[in-house]
Length: 427
Image (cartoon, rainbow, N blue to C red; front, side, top):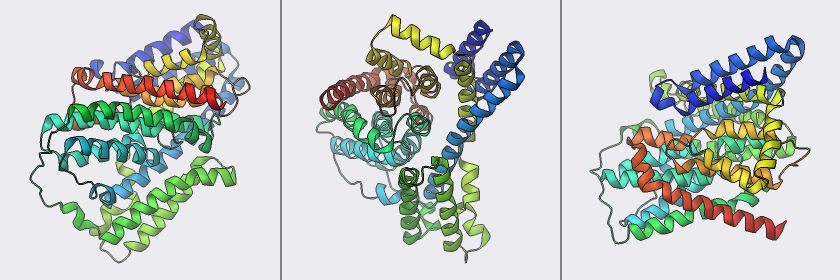
């Protein structure tokens, strides 16, 4: 049985990694893989009661992540529908490319920490289309935005899906991950920025001809500011809600979503239906990426079978014997996340190592958050932010390898050096 489960999982994983060449959506591969794995496990084990109980347990853990993601993505869509991000983007003004790179890098870094790396990448690349006319410049900025978004998402529990998974799973806490990984993530961004600012020295911005943005006519300045600050306030308040109530984060995000929904109804209550249709929470729910959410369901349930059958525990023991050093193991996991999706990698790691062996906020979990979160920047297909940038600016895989991958790589290892040094000094 174990051999069959491993073969099925590897085939499903390969199909996910090769999504673009084989032209089969990764969500389909994940769902089929999960269905086959649980079917094989149930039929071949014969203990249907135990398997059913384990499936219910895994479903409860998966649902917490899914509800949280749905709530967060909906809040972001509402802010975007009200053009709330103009509050930030309208304040970026400079004539030098190198200065703009630093501004964009830091805005992306901190915005990603509050929102998430995928949404921030979409917002910032959309901004670049308004600020830069030269397509090659936009491609280069898009690559750096991917690095900055992934670095920013790694040091907060709501900035990256993998960090969110570790936070909801109880492996890390909010303040500890922010204090532990912030400096490493910052170095991961600053080192590539220093290199790129040297490469772009002396160059001026070529701005496109500005056209009137009809989208701004939908909302007033008050509405944009209100929805922007309320949306961000709700997202930032979720970790505080969890700390004070000890309830799961999804409850906090759903509570906040209800508040945002109420405020939206009150603000737009006197408008005609056709005027406020695109500003409602109902419309925002239709715009969230349900394909990605269902992918998370499939891959998390697939990985759960390997955990319940103790395959992951056996793999952890083998890695300890073969590699020996925990820092090397996690570094390798981060590099592998550049090739395959980091969600199943982190899900597998959570099943490989127990909290009894590695307690909350230990070296393993913090270092895992950094490596899995930033390692995906090394290749364009290694993160959701990279895939989004690839679609928005039509970035070719090998262009990214030639121009951006080496920057992401030196940033990745620079951050690793800083985190290990910091961990040894203060622990």
